[in-house]
Image (tube, rainbow, N blue to C red; front, side):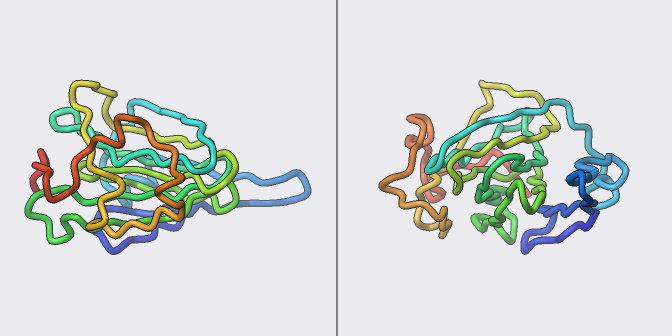
Length: 184
C-alpha cells in the first residue's frame, strides 16, 4: 500500500496495490498493520455505507468530543470528491481543506483524523460510499460547518444552485461563526 501525505499533516491518501488479470482485480482494502505504520494506532469500531445520486453534497460533518471520530473512507461505486476541513483551534492549518477524488476505478482511500469536518459531493450518476469510524455514532454530538461557506474555497465540482442538500446541512454555520470543540 502506498501512503500519500497531503498538505495537512495526518490527513492521508491510501493507494492500494491492485492486481489484475483475466478474472478481474484483487486488492487488500485494509490492513491494520499497514495502516497503523502510517497513521498510528487506531481501532475502527463501525462501518457505514451510503448511496447517493449525482449532485448530492453531504457535509461538512463531525462529532464533538468525547465522541469524535476518525474516518477511513472510500467510494466503491461511482465517483466522489471527498473533503476534509481542519477545525482544530490553534492549528496552523485551521480552516484549510484537502480534497481528493475517490472512485471505483482509482480505489483510493482517504483518512480523516479527529478534529476535521468531512463531506463529499457525488460526481457520477450514482455513488456508493463506505467509511470506517473509530468511534460509534452519537447523535447528541453531531456538528457541522457550512459546506457552501465561500471562505473555505472548496470547489465541489457541482453548481451549488443545483446541489441536493439535506435540510440539516443547509443550517450549519460558516467557519467565521463557528466555535470549534477541537483544540490543536
